[in-house]
Every structure is written in structure tokens, then in C-alpha cells.
Length: 195
Image (tube, rainbow, N blue to C red; front, side, top):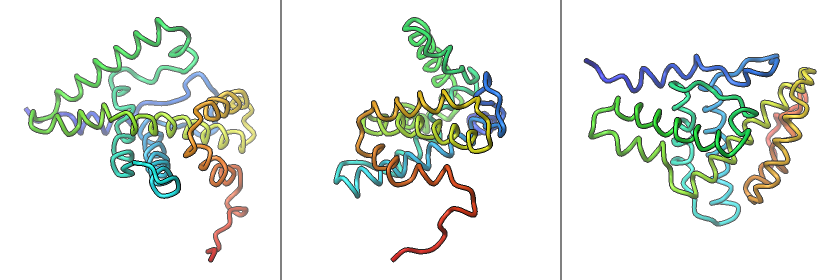
């Protein structure tokens, strides 16, 4: 019997996000994970190259690709339900952990440690992943608002507050230098090379 890990990972594209919201553009977990990886990589570069801190952009991006992999087995729990109270948060974290262990068991034993490190990254990387996840959610809100979908207005406000509350200079830098471009149309984006 072949190992099923990568076939299961490929099913991330079937898990929808924002299921309680009216979406103008539907997003799946695979698309979301790609954006989180792009942003996590950027945050790690900002930490390392702008602020002189310790960060591995490649490790951050790789871990981000798998940060929601457990949702292949659990589905995407809507945020208002997932974070309703401490009991639900604790129970869901346990379910996520069990799902991750079940996924890791679908790999050859020799490969499991490498992927376990992606599912449970070190604290510094985990901090960047959490921030990147929130930034990706904020980007989704901005994209929906840009289409005139006011369903995401409150989510945008709440997510921006959470980002500001993180107190991470990397997030503040990303917000100051990059987030505004997500509110522009293609024609408004500056494609010229600055020198």
C-alpha cells in the first residue's frame, strides 16, 4: 500500500475557508497556505535583513505551507466558533494535534522527523507563522472589501487590531510598506522599477 501523505496534502484545495461569510472570491486552504508562506518568508526576511534578528525565511515558508494541513481531516473551523471560549480553543487544539499526528503517520518513518519539525516549528518561526496567518486573513478582507463586499468590513477591523496588538516590528514594517498596495487595482499598482 502506498503512503498517502502527499495525496492527502493535495486535498487542501478542497477545504474552503470563510464558510460563514458571503465571498466574492472563494478561497481554499491550499491558496491560503501559499499566501501565508509568501508572507511568512517576507516577515523572516524583514526580521533578519531589516532588524538584524535571527530568522530562517526558507524554514518559515516551508512551515507555513503545512500550518493548516490538519484541516484536511478536521475541516476549517470558522473563527467565531473556534475562538468562542477557552474550552473550545483547548479542545480544537487537541483535535488539530491528533489530526497532525495522524497525517504524519502516513509518511515513511524515516521522513517523519523532518515533517514533524514543519508541523511544530520552533517558537520564533511559530511567532512569524501566526503573524503571517493573520496578515493573510487581513489581505483576504481587503480584497473582499475592494470588490464592494461589505461582509468583510468588521473582520478587517478586528484582524487589523489583532495585528497591531502583536507588537511585532516585522508586522508593523509589512503593514507600513506593503499592505496598502492590496487596496489598489492592477492599473494603480506601480510596476516601475525604483532606483
